[in-house]
Length: 391
Image (cartoon, rainbow, N blue to C red; front, side, top):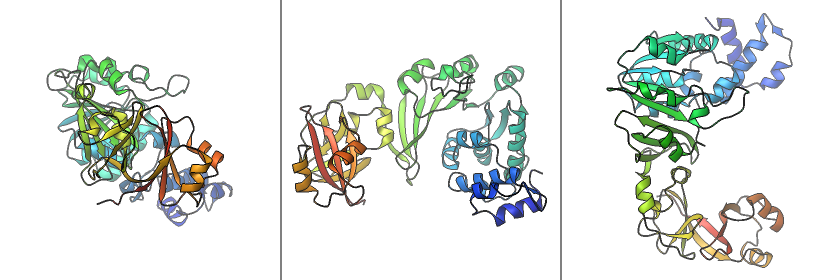
């Protein structure tokens, strides 16, 4: 048992305490090791929204901070669990959140982790949360697969994104394990599902994997959290890309192919009555022309903002009504923002929001958003807007 009844009681009693202040106390309080329990209290405070099911179980024991940072959230893990079925092997088990989600959906799951200490913590947590439904293996995942050539339905991989010296890496070839080395194992009905950094270049990844079946851009509250690549022996170089926003009841907000994006036509225009800012997932997917459809116009060749005369309420992103626009100077600011307060967003503009605030003494907040961008004539423009109400 990772935590005794006395330790669980201590964590509950100090659940809202400042971990730093608590750590300044004596090393032992009535036989309780603060060195052991302060990190548990800190983890529970940090993960209350990321892993609510795990936090609600008092017997869950959390691994070191680095493992917590690399773990999936419950939302993203359960989304991935909806993509797979059958006999699954998680080659890079880690903290085990994804394995937990796969098994929770009723799949047959083998968890593999080379760090035995971390693996034992995860095994304990899986048993606490799900009982003995997951097989746990401690060792190298690829070696295990070679020694156990079973008919896996899915191989799941979330490679470590740190190099031998602890530096952050992004490319699949630089991560550990190297996903490219798994390609010969994709045969018959076996498929490979890979989770990667949101910073990874999607086109390059498709090329490195010699084609994939589908790509998912997974977002939470307009922030790209992870990319997923599915590969089978029938993969191709022009897969469908899906953008999902998990905070919505219907998470799919846009989908398309990169070939369609390359062939799509786009018109450019000066600012009209409405301004649109695409969702972060759509920008990550690179659907800069496809998103406009036939009704929106782009404000600049390299400015990913859009405009229209009539409101397009279904646009996947933020929608604003234009109040005023003009040259970015002090006179315009004084005439149009007399309160000196506005939220600021920049697109293809030579100054950052912080620099704009400092130069023109604009405070943050209020109902207005000031967009600073370069227009179709490569001219710097300010546009004062008000967010359209959500239907």
